Length: 73
Image (tube, rainbow, N blue to C red; front, side):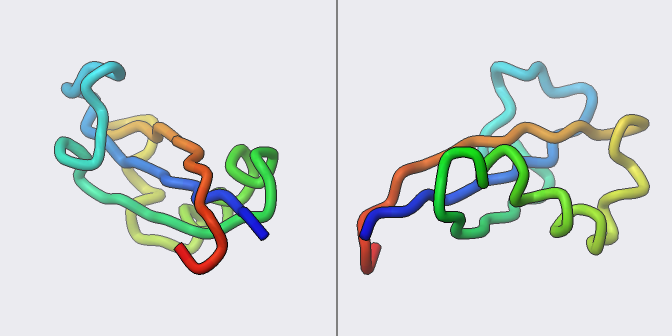
């Protein structure tokens, strides 16, 4: 069965949104989710429990990506 990988990028406010990617992010979180909807909602708990939550909206912002992965991949 195929699934999805929710990728949450934490980028500094100084990084333009179009340039926010894994190479330019200060932190990257990944979690496997069952559907594309999970990519939009599956990351909130990860961020809420992390130490980076304090800077979100002040010195950093979030960008999410959704990647399709094959079973076993």
